[in-house]
Length: 326
Image (cartoon, rainbow, N blue to C red; front, side, top):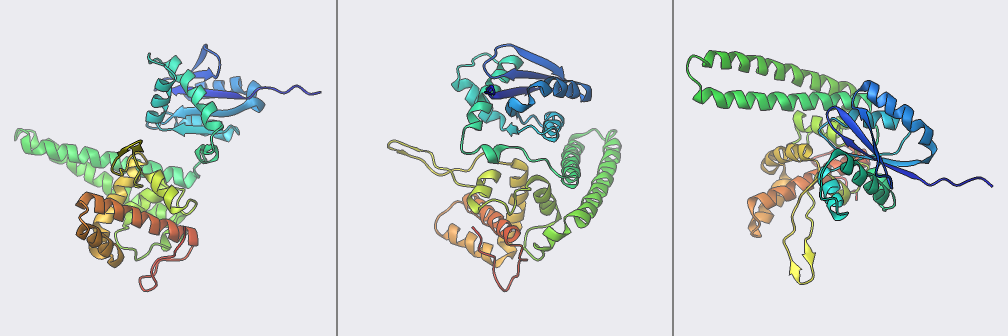
């Protein structure tokens, strides 16, 4: 009779220079360098448990987790990358009052076990981005960084001493050139690798190049989820806060902030130029909704439209409305 081994759940606390590894049920942690050689050593160490590892879980840490997560996926492990706030709240619920890399890793290992046995497991497992999507994400991220630097330099210009304004102008000129170059690279990449999807959105008001790039780079789930799921994923779904006799207002929170910011700018344009969204916005405002609430509703409607178009594979047509797909 073959021996049945217990499943292993692993939590990884990712720092800039280190990876703290915890196995559920074990207080002792193991540390590896957060580098190419360190990740390789970790995978060699993990190979002895490969058939028993159920889930490896880590927090999203601004990209520092990307290398180890991708290598784990390529090696065939089930990987979850979760929102830090959710992980911290879970750790507090377990009574972890101190915060160290080791205790964080132990809490993440327990969180891996909990999520593995939840009905959301399959949706939380990380999917490897394609090479094209990964490059597009890098370009979009770099463009956002350049924009932040340009805004900072522009703000400094007004209060700078006149002897330093020439320096600021030189930096702004360099930043503008880099932004222009990055925009051209993004457009070329979209046309080469994502033209089939983007052709479906031609003519849809408000959805310009920047929005398309963000959707293709940061929302690969478009067309694969229903309208409620995609809205929650982005963070534009109204969530209730009702308990007992308390009845609160519906609020939106969480989700993917970069996608939400792109949709906000798209919705601002769409409520002016798209007939359906303009009517939607005016109806909500006439009903007494605040301008921000009405605009978020239009963001959700625009996202639903884009998701339906991607799911149906039918291009948007102004004279025939939008495809009705749940």
